Image (cartoon, rainbow, N blue to C red; front, side, top):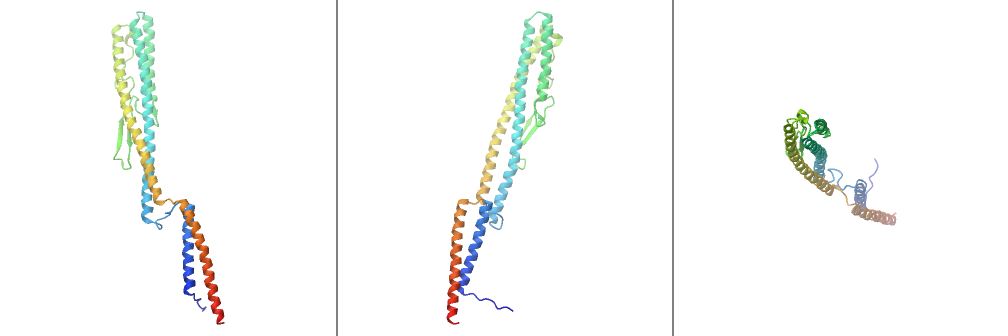
Length: 275
């Protein structure tokens, strides 16, 4: 059995100090390479798990933020549709007024035909005003529910508004009797005026919902940033500080090596006296 090598107290102390410095250098180099001062629960359990929780919530809210953003676009599509429909209804009103002002039967017939064509365009525009598969102003409008938090306890439900010319929507009938009778034209104008009022109301309702979503979108983005920043403060390393620390540790390591070498030489010199 080989004899154990005995170390003097001085050499042992220098060796232990050098080993500690080497471990510290390894830790600092890991922080510099990863950019993190807390790489695992072994480094700091409290900071690590708190950071994970903050990051997970930020990730969940980021997904909700994307959904809110899509919902804003869905509302924009509906509002743009309402604007386009309003322009078409205004054009239909102009045709009805022209029919009311003329006594020419052939012209009334032509105007009635154009009027009916506009009604078809109104319905087509409403049915085309969808985004991501959701249409808030078609004949059978969709309902949009937007969640604002992770457990779904905070949300906004947006009920669609039928903006077609049908009875459940704007309720504008085709030109009766090809606008031959003044009463038929007056009825059409009355329906058109009511439709324009309804369109203004619908636009205001959708605009209000859009404002709510824009506010929540901005709030969620800020909250995600706050959570990410908080998580980073717990785990991110100060690279300037770690670089300076590495330089100091490397200097200490070199001094430790020199000190250990001197201590060993001193002991060998003493032993030589008794050789």
